[in-house]
Image 1: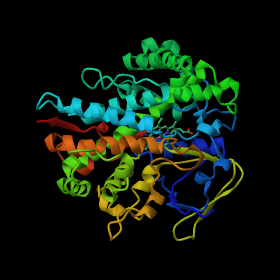
Image 2 (image 1 turned 90 degrees about the horizontal axis):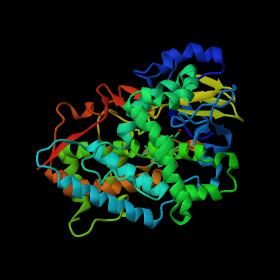
Image 3 (image 1 turned 60 degrees about the vertical axis):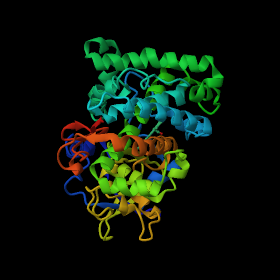
Image 4 (image 1 turned 180 degrees about the horizontal axis):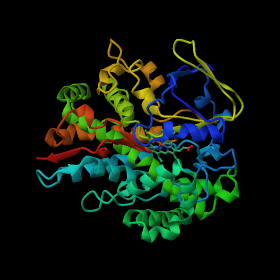
Length: 453
Ligand code: HEM
């Protein structure tokens, strides 16, 4: 009960209450804005930090599918069932593969036709898609090797995210989702492709992983995991989880790399300072673990995670065994949230709270440094980019490894030859407008256009 952070919560003690509050909280535009009448609350409970007391909202006879379980009967990611693999480990093998992938990406960017404009997020989606598929299936999906940078996994899931968002908030749509596989061919090319990925391509990768357990990575381990009930080990569930990994691990990390690239180009002072702290990287590029200890680089990554939270929808939790006590900063308003109540909150609210992050819309890595230039680790208490508690991201380390490994190469080799093609105020480019599971600006998904000379 000691963690004190600013959370804004939606409290839904029963269905009738849910019905009346839903329009307030769930309107697509401005989703995480605090509903009127709900003060900024400070949590007096560690519900997001106590694995044993939280769970997915499956009471009330209703199962909340994970966003990627479209067409699957699975509940949320079952990664947590098997404690032995609940956090993706990061051996030197995968770090080596990440480095190889990053080098290929840089080579391909630098061989772009001079002056040709490319959306760097597509580049990063190819990188993250290949890294994740290599990690979980044992083979990459070949996005970096293809000609150009599209299609990639994110291209296909764009339409899926729109329908997943709607289903997340609408019980009828969620029920209808069961029939989407039957109707996929009539629902547009992207949905048909997503369905093909889920029902044909991914099961193929998983079968290959199971046929070659030494290279089978995550899925070979799942089958051997005794703590996971057998009912979750069929291809139906495994392919849902394979899709989950790709969905969770591509767009998120790519978005952070996009924000970093944008600001290194848009704010020369930040770029200059970073290069000064990195020193000469021409002969060899430092390992990501070394880079992470560079305070200014670390500060840039934290600030990017703050500005671009990766997942902008609300994280759902239930405190099963304790009532939650929320009170405002002044301590004069207290709300008791009864145990068993589904609640949700969005990291964007915290990340854009001026009492926690002064001038929150500005990209200022310096805010993460103390006066002596060392990292301000305490500020991380307010950063919820990877979530908290039992359902927090299982892959923070892998994501960091990907980010530092590619970002340092972008800084030393691509940025000096790149031109930004993003007119207007840099602060506007990633400004939250509405939620579609990942953050959307008023112009839709984030992007960053550059050309190479
Ligand atoms: C910068 C990159 C990333 C960010 C910001 C991020 C953020 C998040 C967040 C906020 C959650 C939900 C936590 C909650 O509900 O409280 C989550 C869950 C998850 N993430 Fe990540 N993530 C990133 C990269 C990755 C990668 C590379 C993978 C690799 C496969 C991954 C796999 C997952 C999975 C499987 C879950 C669901 C866990 C569960 O339901 O128990 N994420 N992530």
